[in-house]
Length: 417
Image 1 (cartoon, rainbow, N blue to C red):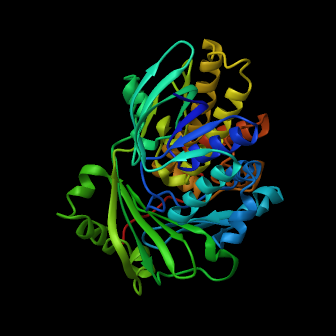
Image 2 (cartoon, rainbow, N blue to C red):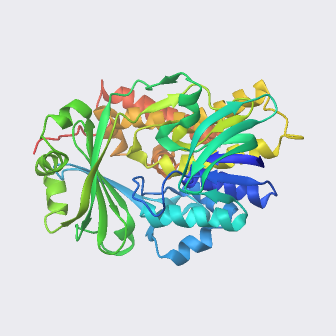
Image 3 (tube, rainbow, N blue to C red):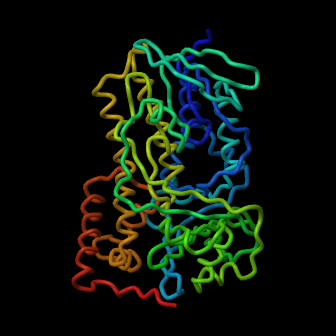
C-alpha cells in the first residue's frame, strides 16, 4: 500500500495551491484529478487579494510570462447604459494588489497543476476516488485510474473537488443555501465583443439589470467571456434552450446588445444552476475542505478563485502546524471552519447588498467622505480580513444602504429601457 502525508481530491486552483505549498515544505502529496487537462471551466476573473498565494506558491512569474490579460480594475454599468462606475485597484492598494489577471481557465489550471507537480506533488489524472475509510490514524482511499485500482493511505485528505464536494457528500455533512434565491448562469466565449481602450482594456464589466446581471471578461485581445445570471425559474422561462435564453436576455439590455453587436460566438453555451451553498463544517480530524467544496457564493464579485487559493493555503498551513501527523483537534477544526466562513461571509454581505437596488444605488455613487469609495474598492479587490478602520466603514456603507430606502442619499436607479 502506497502512503502519502496528504491526498488532495481535485487538481484545480485550490488543490494545486495546497499541493504546491505542502510539497515545497517537504510533505509527500498525491493530487487525484478526475478530468484530463486542459478542460473548460468557468470562473475566469481573478481579484488582487489572491495574488499573495500565487506568489507564495512561486507561480507568479510563470503567469506573467504566460501572457494572460492584465486586470487593473472593475466597472459596473446599468443595463440601459444610464449609470456607470469604475474602480482602479491602484488607487488605494499597494503595488502587490494593484493588478491581477483575467484567465482562460483551461491553460491557467493546467499551469497551476503542472507547477504543483514540479514542486514535488504526485499527480494521478484522470482518476477518481471510489471509496474512503476515515480511520483514527489515517484515511484509506480506493483510487481508480487508467492503470487500474489501488489503495492509498494518507495522514490527511484535502477535498478540493469543487461543487462535487466529495467529502461533504461522503459524510452527509449539513449545508445551507445561505438564504439566496436559486440562480442560473448561462455563458459562452465570443470574439470581437466591444472592448475598452487603454489601461481599462482588461477590466471586467458587470452590467446590472433590475434583478440580474451580465458579466463580460476580456480573456485576450479578441476573446471575451460573456454570461448572464438571473433567478433560475425566470431565466428558464425565457426560452427552450440555452442559446435562446441567452439571446433573449441580451436583447433586453441596451448596454449588453451594444457590446455584442459585432461579436461572433466561439464554441458552445454552458450553464450552471443553483450554485449558492456552504457546508456548516469544513474540517474533521483527518480532512479539510477548500474552495468550492467548502461552499460557493454568487460569483458577482469574482471571489471563487481567490477563496480557492486562500483556503488552499489555509489548509496547508493547518496541516503543517500538526505535530507527528496528529489528528486535527476539535478546536483546530472549529478555528479552520470559522476562517473559511469569514472569507465567504464578507462576500455574502456584499452580494446581498448588490441585489438590493437601494444598496446598489449607494454602490454606484460612493462618496469620498469617510473614504467610502476606497472601502468599496478594497472589497471589490477581495480584502476579507478587515481591520477596525475597514470594518466600521463597511458598516457605514451598509447603514447608508439602509437609509437609502427611506431617504435618498444617492440618486435612485432607473432600469427602464
